[in-house]
Length: 282
Image (cartoon, rainbow, N blue to C red; front, side, top):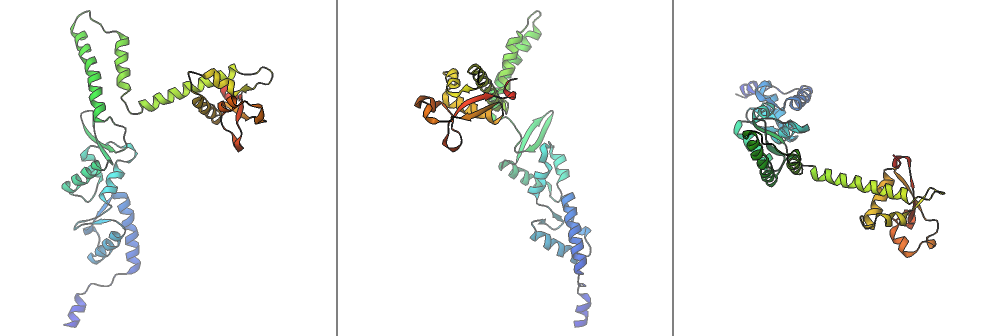
């Protein structure tokens, strides 16, 4: 009986073979997402590899050894890929339809995935994709709906036209609802403020020294630009190498009012002089 049990026992696995197969399987999982357990022979080797990979975070079921579904879904949608459900399912290995559906719902709840209508159907995108919120969609629909009605009336009525400026206004209003519009507007405001500062530096420039007294610059910009904003724009212009800011040689020469208008410099100095650099003279 003992002899029969020994013959029925599985042969011992060669550890070098286990290590080699484990390395190969890791590469396959990285490339394919999942590997069927039935493709790994003998069965004892498949079970040994499954245990090892489970300890490394892989997911194991009766049929598959796979990278975590979460990881596979996130990887498929990385780099801005827009996939319909069928295309995404083709890239995810080792999951049943029901299991994949649950994983997609979880990804959507966690904000890692967004469902977006493109063209004639729904696609899936990474959660960070710039999309319109529900409130923005309602406002956009109302904005463009009015234009759609006007266009329909103009098309149906012979000789009736629309003012180009009216159409442009509606399109501009719609564009303001798009992601990034606010950031773009802020960028535009910053560029305008910088141009105003550069102009003021030039207007305050002393013909002999080529330097501009910072308090005079800030006063020229007032009241259109608060002193704190003017100082920040001067510092920004210096960081962008549009102007050079220099500290006052002796703080005792500045009045308290002038000191308040000068941005802080190194070692508790005040930056009281500005010089236009080549980049600011364009």
